[in-house]
Image 1 (cartoon, one colour):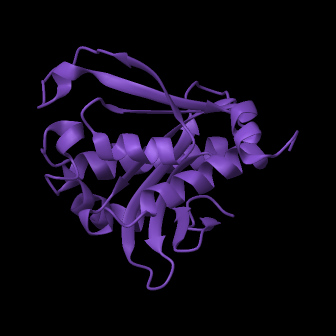
Image 2 (cartoon, helix red, strand yellow):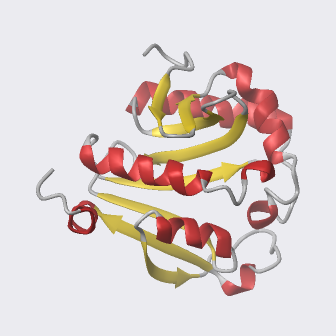
Image 3 (cartoon, one colour):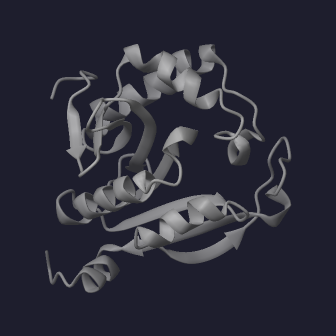
Length: 196
């Protein structure tokens, strides 16, 4: 896989996760332009095209150069290639690969169809079985019940509730954030896999 060439990272029954390219900026603008998609992130405010093009996409591409198989992945429908959103599976600490953060942002049309769980489970499985990941963590707002369900269905367990100071409060932020996690050992025990 060459740098930022759009190569496939992972395929599931219904999804293809591939590297982002600079040609994906319009897809990100559309995704982040939906107030419901951004509800628990910005209170519904869209991300500016300039920020997505000048900061977000370069960050995605830089992660491929630095970490190869840990980063952000464009999610497409395996049948028709439609852009569904993205998944994040990246190191939480600079230069370390032991702990990764799982995240996802999908278009509203993809909600409620099991795509988030399917992609998250596949990433967790690959992380533990092939990439040497030791712990997967995920965060969301306490009130984001849909995202919390995906975390639970993906094998992560509730760890804690915490509060952070944000420049702008959004609806529900007074209830804090939650952390979910699973270790490789826990995942193997639940999966019936010993030492692999």
